[in-house]
Image (cartoon, rainbow, N blue to C red; front, side, top):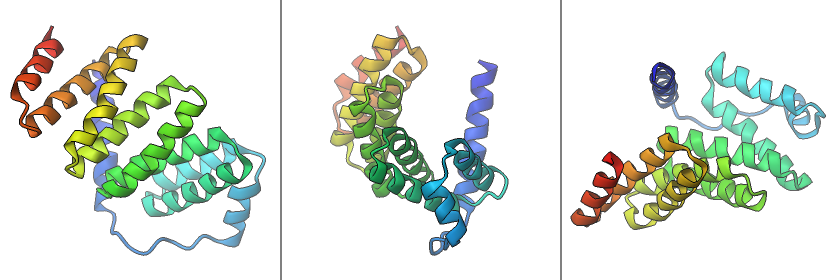
Amino acid sequence: MYYRLCFIFIFFLQTMCMQAQELKKPPVLSDSTKVFITSSDSVKAIKQLFKKTIRVDKDTLLTMEYYKLFLERGITTKDSKIQLYSAYRLGYYYNALSDYKNAAKYSQLSLQVATMVNDTTHIISSQVLLGSSYFQLGIYDKSLDPYQDAQKLSQSTGDKATELLCLTNIGNIRVKLGRYQDALNVCTETLS
């Protein structure tokens, strides 16, 4: 429980830092950085650059530009791991910056790749992110499906925390849709 609270607190702080960052034109990448991201044999070194840029430099927009370039590389080389990693992170950052339309776009791409490679963990996380993006856009009926799919998969894998998160969100969506009895049923299921 302590670690979950710490994780939530860190997630909250990171989200607030990203939202506080001034939205401006996308940063211009240097030619050497472009070459590094598009051709380096060390994916680990590329990911370290991303981590440094977001954690140390606290430059969300530059990090997102890096991920976009890395995603292009993954698509060009047909590398599903790079595509999945980049698309999910872009969906996450766009969601944190309240750009839910782009969050949904990249979450959908992440879900497609995760499904193609049968990566259950990323299927679930992509569905949760997609459901959240649709919810924030006010497309409640469309946000229901990803949460329901994620809930079923979470249940089948024994991931109780994500299952409860999904059930709670399903209940909230049903309230927004005016389906109060369905929402009550989900709340009862969540509490049992």
